[in-house]
Length: 128
Image 1 (tube, rainbow, N blue to C red):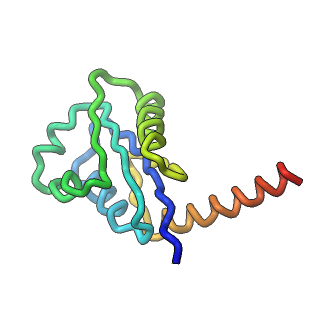
Image 2 (cartoon, helix red, strand yellow):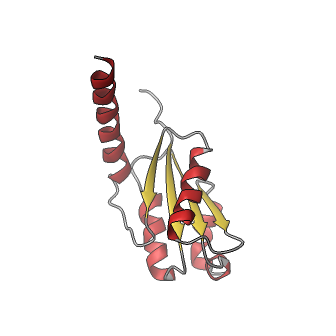
C-alpha cells in the first residue's frame, strides 16, 4: 500500500469561541486521513487558547502549527497567510477550514479522492 499524500489544512481564526474551537480541532484530529498538517493563523490573541488546559492535546500534536499575527490582517489576508504557510510545508493539496467548521471523519479522504479525479480529468482535457 502506498503512503498517504500530505494534505495541508489552512485554518484562519479570529476570537474563536473556545468550546466550538475545541470541537473543530477534535474533528480535524479524528480524520481517517492521518497525513495532514493544520496551520492555524490567529488574527487575535492566542493566549486564551494557549492557557486553556483543554487545548493541551492540540498544542502537543505536532500536526497542528499555531501562529499569532502581530497585527490584525483581516479575514482574507489571514486565510491567505495560512494557505501560503501550509503550502510551504510540502503538501500535495490544501483544504481550507473556516473557524466555524466541524468536519465529518472522512472529509479529507473523500475530498482528496475527488481532487485526484479532477486532477486526472484536467490532465486529460489539457493534454488531449
